Amino acid sequence: MIKYFSSTDFVIAGKDELALWLESATNNEGRSLGDLVFNFCSDESLSKINKEFLNHDTLTDVITFDYSTLNEISGEIFISIDRVRENASEFQQSFEQELKRVMIHGLLHLCGYNDKTAKEKMLMSDRENYYLDSFS
Image (cartoon, rainbow, N blue to C red; front, side, top):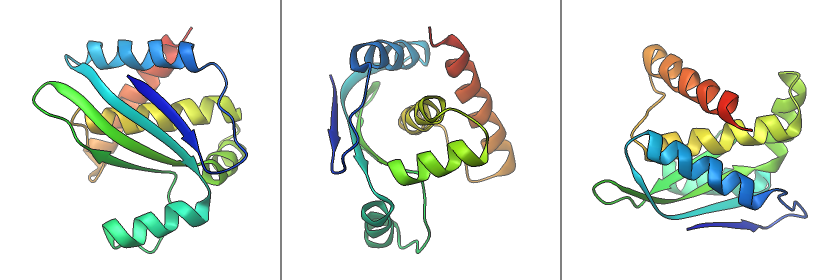
């Protein structure tokens, strides 16, 4: 089950379509979907989480907390709407496209992908693009 929460004035559109897309990606990765929560917040809120839980003093667009068991993915994905807006502008993407990229990025972390090395980043980016292209 996918749930969406926001601590800002942001309201997500197309929840059902997004949920079907995310579940399809999960299944395509050989996993099943458990409980997945997307929390949309501000830079300030995500920065606090980043400092408290990861000891990082930097801005980020997404932080994923993995509660998965065996083959069933579950977790919380925190997304800074401020970062998504800024990154969309910087990379000349629509806000909606950048939001989907960050959402699938968080989901891919729950499926076992990492992005610490150049090789991992390339694989993660390839998978993001694959799923973004599949969104109808």
